[in-house]
Image 1 (cartoon, rainbow, N blue to C red):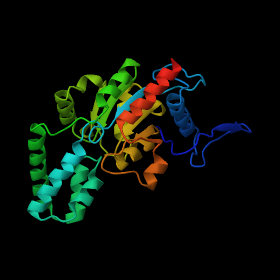
Image 2 (cartoon, rainbow, N blue to C red):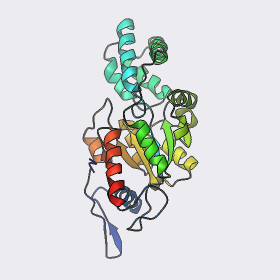
Image 3 (cartoon, rainbow, N blue to C red):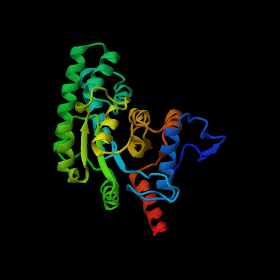
Image 4 (cartoon, rainbow, N blue to C red):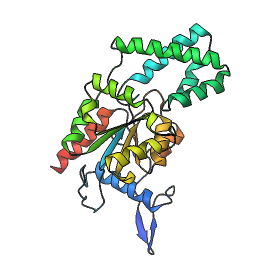
Length: 276
């Protein structure tokens, strides 16, 4: 079931707006209220008004690696094998810091950790080569519930996008080969923005291309940097953890934490049946 990180206690008093202790702006109030409207059965997905008169979610933006594909696990496996081969200690912890960021930012993180450009570039080249070999062998699995959730959203007129730190051409290739590309209205890769997550640029770009206001967008992310970026963009953030389980920061920051896309889908289906 949905686990909201904070109770819903929005109210007006003395002509002003009061809401959660952590919430300091009226915009944040509208985001949280809109998401509660969507998930708690007071409205539906689309562009209509809810029973409370609050605009419901117009668009859902997905991260790709770790949300659509079980690729983060495959990436860590490749990193571990190559690191053992070239003699890089502590690679798993370093790689966790790279989850959700662009290739350029990943290189910077590796250089900070190992301070050897030649070693880092050799490591990255071997890792990419091994990853592609495993990918070509059909080892890149689609996460459970992806297709079902996408069909559910499409059936209800909700626009969808991918906002991934991976290059756009790679994103399109992987989605196409998995039979998923047609589900998405827009694709925004990390090469299309100047700043990587946790900056909000990629989500704001996706919202702009979808024609949706940030406060009416819901982001589904697995990474800490992705959740930070979604909140910085003023969007509702749903965390579906993959390799990294939520810590105190994520528990406080994410609007909702679900163990899987199937749990998210089940919740939405129950609400739809209840409203019918």
